[in-house]
Length: 272
Image 1 (cartoon, rainbow, N blue to C red):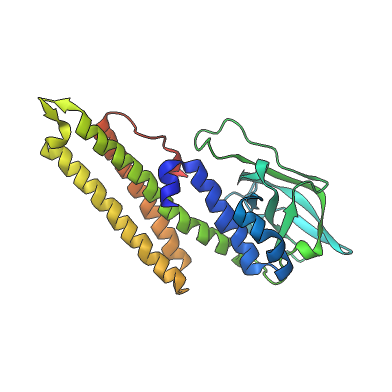
Image 2 (cartoon, rainbow, N blue to C red):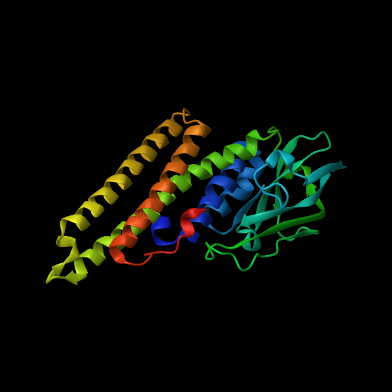
């Protein structure tokens, strides 16, 4: 995620959704049949996936979701809508969360081309335009019962996926900061003032040293968090704090790079 974001924030966003928000819940909560059917194609890139949680009226309150399912024979009937969904217009499958008739949140896999399922693209975004974003609209979509995640109930399912994604974003923010630092460093070696590169002045050197120090601190923090995650000891709060800290660090690095370079050295698309 660090190196993908260092090159293009849109690619990192797509990869983060594919791995953390689509493959992970199928691997963690799916049946053996679902794993065999979808994971190899998702892993190879033959299939693109998206993650349907955010709704038009409940962006930061997933428990208030209105998307719902009702049982109908060997299937569930899905109705509702999701908003600001990365990959949705190009996705082959969607991992969707909806409330059942008892008010419990359930997860399921909805395939592209299912009658009543559409994914219109959102145009005119202010940032991260390289990332394809759209809606998910469900109008009496018939989802087979074998496409449901059988055991998981409640917010634990979608929130565990978001923790995985936030860990990836924590690395992604470091990649954005590295690109800012590299751009400022190269510029400081090329820009001549008073008959020498501006990188030869101590004030510029101080800025560059502080930038790479903060980046290295963020790398060490996030690497340690990964070790804890491998030991199943990383908490959602720790992951969220690492994401917040690294995104703020990247913004500070971008400001420092601007002071050296004189202009913003990359689009501020990593604010998401």
